[in-house]
Image (cartoon, rainbow, N blue to C red):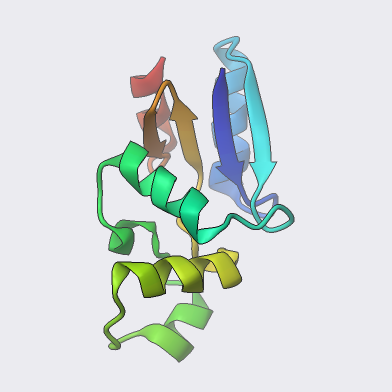
Length: 113
């Protein structure tokens, strides 16, 4: 079964869930603003994504621009920051069978079907 990490206020997340529904995919929806991911969970997502932590960071988010832009952080520091401030996590993230995709554009999710 798929798992989608989403922000309920995000139009891309809503579109991603619509796409999953249209394709008859069953999924578990995780609102990561309410169910804060631990640094270890975020590390697991990174492993599934096969990318570095910088790809998980929403660099257009006002909080990023105000507090973090232009500063260097290690992967472990970023994982702590993202866990404490999940609004900075890129979204939606869809996971299936040990693989994950950031659904931007939303159609990328189809790669997991």
